[in-house]
Every structure is written in structure tokens, then in C-alpha cells.
Image (cartoon, rainbow, N blue to C red; front, side, top):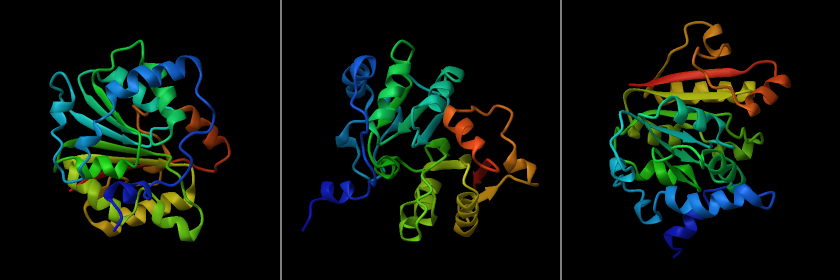
Length: 234
């Protein structure tokens, strides 16, 4: 019988590191990652984490971003909303290093990170604890046999639904048209969310307070359309 840690490792797909870390990025990982990482012993996947215990002071809201890449979006959220607490999941060390380097000289007591499979964190959180969840430009996993790896599908939506408060938002984006169709279909078939869009412009135009990242700008140049999908937990 395999131990639980081995099974968890198999849930992550892809390379964890590309370029070697040097200079400020390496320093940030060495100094900040141990301090800001959610302790492994709390990631029991039995909904037992007490989110408030992760932070040194109380917060008004708690938000999670899954797959934050280089962290541009999460950094700006932290700057705009210092009264909120944030959780960020990113399995790739290069992206994590860029994020930690960016926040090293700024207040960062209101963020905690997880550098592994995001579902390990989601499954460890208690019911109805999140005020919102971002999943921005996830890997489309183009091949049909890899669709089971997509981060938005009915199985994962059940986990997200559990940890989101009633009325909380699940905010998704992509520059891959057929992935947008997939996300919308999976969410609607799940049945636990309402889609806020009333017309095409509602998903083709970013919200007024949208934080645009370099990846989004680069992707939009080669795509016919960017899709911004906001769902509400019911």
C-alpha cells in the first residue's frame, strides 16, 4: 500500500523549476518561503485548518488565488487591500520566487503561500471560509486525455463550493476560447454557482477594477478574445 504523500505527489503534473534561481530571487525563497508557507502538518485534507491562526492579526476577508504564476495579480491585490488576508497556491518555484522577491520589501504579513497541488490546501480549509477565489489563465491541457487535469472541472468545483461562503465569487479567466466554453459548461453542470453574465460583453470586457498582468497582455495579442467569467456561490 502506498503512503499518502506518494499519492499526493502524483496529483501534480509539470516541471516544478525551469531556470536556476540566483540573486534576489534565491534570497527571497531562502528567507521568505519558510516564513510564509502554510506548515505541511496542517495540510491534512480534512478541513481542519483554522485560517485566522495563520495570520498575526484579524482580517476582514480571506481570498485564495490558485496558480498565481509570477504573482503580479496577487501582489496588486495585497497592495489594494491590506485589510484582507490572502492565500496563494503556485507549484512552480520560479513563479514563487518572483512573487516573494516582489513582496520582500513590502508588508506581507497578510499572505500565506502553498507551493504544491492547490487541492491539498483547498481540502484542508474549513467549510465556507473564503470570500473569493481566483483562477486566472490556467493551463488548458489541450489533449483530450489530459482534460482530467484541468483545475476547473466538476470534481474540483465541489471542493471550491465547499470552502466558499454563500455569495462569494469564483473568478476565472482565459485566452483560450474552448477552455472558456469548458469552464462555463462545467460550472453550469455542477449546479452550485450562478453565472453573473447577462450578455457577451459581460465576459469579453474585464470588470472595472480588473488587475491586468503581463501574461494576460501577451496572451491577448495572440488570441481573438479574452474571457472573464465571474460566478457566485449559491
